[in-house]
Amino acid sequence: LTCEVRMMRFAALTAAMLLASASLSQTYSNDFEGPVGSEWSSAATSVFNGSTVLGRFDNGTVTLTLNGLNMGDIVTLGFDLFVLDSWDGTNGSYGPDRFKVAMDGVDVLDTTFSNVSFYTQDYPNPTGTGSFAYQTNADDKDASAGGTLPNGYFGNSLYKFGGGVNPSFSAIAGSSTMTFSFTGSNLQGGSDESWAIDNVKVNAVPEPGAIAVLAAGVGAFLAARRRKQS
Image (cartoon, rainbow, N blue to C red; front, side, top):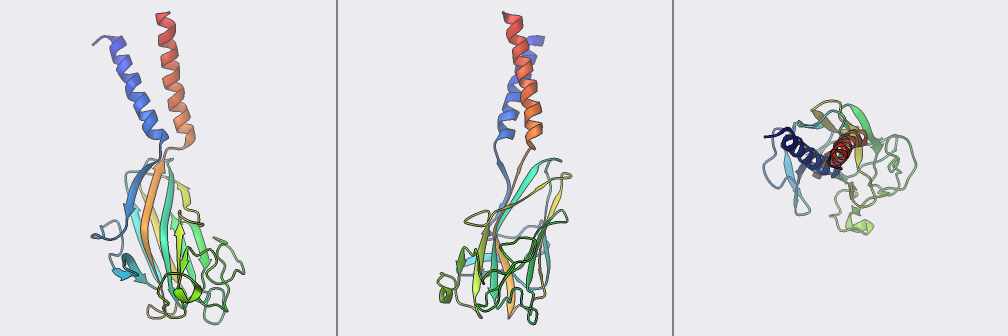
């Protein structure tokens, strides 16, 4: 092959890489309707409201570990959180009932939830304090509170992070591996207060600066080639 043909092929390949990098690509998703893989620290599932979910859990941490990322990728996490039964939110006697999410050890959610009508919760403040009514920002709730979920013990609520009114979470990948942790704390036990997750989605996209550098390289090559042909 001549040098010019090789360079043309390189330009075409680089342009294809640029197009692929510029569009968001889903790297992982799981609705738990099939077997739970080794990427999860727990494979415990149950059926809630007709769907298979990961959980129920109470106090403790469940982790998801994903490989194949690129350092500098912008990684976005979305999932459905089921807050089940008598979570007491900010109450100091029976709570505070907390749920935390961390991406590579950095907390992106650390807040309290309440299903009890006379106790407040910190959420929708994601990592601080608040005094919001129970089930604020819930995408669905128990039937007794006007939703479609089973009533449970005092109540149930569903928060769709990355869907509906609740935002997803993002972090920069520091290496090819990222760990996502989900933690419940200060709960009164699975028969009283528990949680589950479903529809986990993780997306990764190169940091905008990397895309700009790649685009500049392709543009410079094509400009030089046009000058040569003119």
